[in-house]
Length: 160
Image 1 (tube, helix red, strand yellow):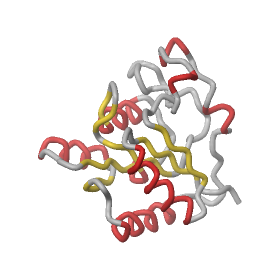
Image 2: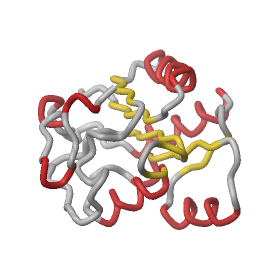
Image 3: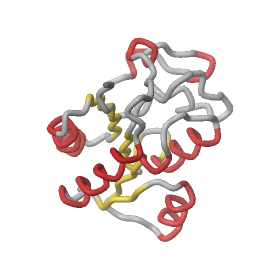
Image 4: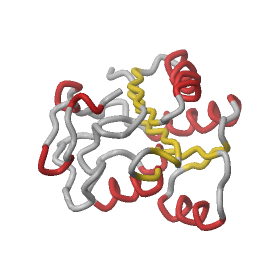
C-alpha cells in the first residue's frame, strides 16, 4: 500500500513545521516548502500539468506566499489538469476576506484559520483519508523535482 503523501506550502517556518509534524505523526510522507515551486503550474497558468498521476494525496497551503496566493495556486492547478482531489486541498490564513472564502468554496478546498486547530485539522484529514483510493498511484518523487523551465521559470535552488 502506498503511504499517504502530503505537500505543505507556507512561508512561515514555524507553521510549516507544526503542520508537517502533525502529518508525519499520522504516518504520512510529508514534503514541505516555503514556496510551491515544484508544481508545474506554479508560475505559468498556461502550462498543463504534465504528470500522469497526482503528486500528493493532500495539499495544505498558506494563502499569502511569494509571487502567488494559495487560492491562485490551487485555481491554476485545477484549470490546468492537476490530478489531486480538490477536496483534499486546504488553504490557511490568519485573516480571510469574504471574497477569498467565496473563492475557496468555489474551488472546493477546505479553509482554516491560521494557525489551524489540531482537532479541526485532524477531522479534515480523517475525511481526506476516506476519499483516497488505497490502490492509487502517485507521481514518482524524482519526477516531482524535474522542472520544465519553459513552464516554471525557476531553478532547483528555489526549493527550500
